[in-house]
Image 1 (cartoon, rainbow, N blue to C red):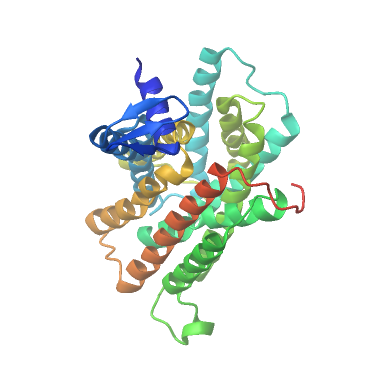
Image 2 (cartoon, rainbow, N blue to C red):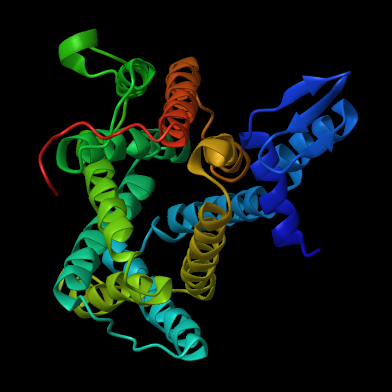
Length: 345
């Protein structure tokens, strides 16, 4: 039996109620006897060794390296120039995947795909700008609140259900952002020393990332993943040269950093997408939280950015909110509860 089939069977058994019969567990759906030892083994497999979690861990790690490359390249290079290189290489990457899959590169729902491309481009620009102008750990902490925005927008526009724990988790994550940013109108003359424009761009990026995710969810029903992925780099290569007139010729090291941004970001996106395809978001939300840990480590090791206690407290609140939100949303999905009527998206 292949690894994929084994993982499916493990997840099926974990999600299926078991009945205790003489110290062993019976799965009524398949009439399978599962010992306590084997059930514990399957639990460890699903939590730590599944293909989805390995893919997500690798993707998160690669993405964190890409963020470090953005920070290093952005010391002298404008954001639009870094984006342009990422876009060109992204088009080549998607073209190879589309060609291997044997599907059309432009897709069928082209208006929605173009909209996804524009939103994705704006989200990437905001993300890159925030990473360049804010301490790396603070930027990632703020951007990491996008699961909360996704849940909120899905509730408003798609009628997806939000449990009470989800609402508490969202409130905790928002409190975490406030703790990290420490705005003057709440804290007086705070010592956050964060670039105000960078903070607002990061918060705008959270909303844009969330909109991009919702469009991807809609397009995934009819379009190949590589087709969905190709539109943002297409928009980037067409628009980014007009956003800035102060492009500079990169040094050898800066050019390597820009190539690193393109390679690690595209590879990270591929493995994270693969992880989401193999596992539920609720199961692997803990892995995505490691992006904050990686960002803090890279910032301290290569940039001399030592996170203060406020960043740790805010990051903790956001991570806990994300974990609770993922668990609560997963529980709602597994119970197949009917969605609450709301605005259509």
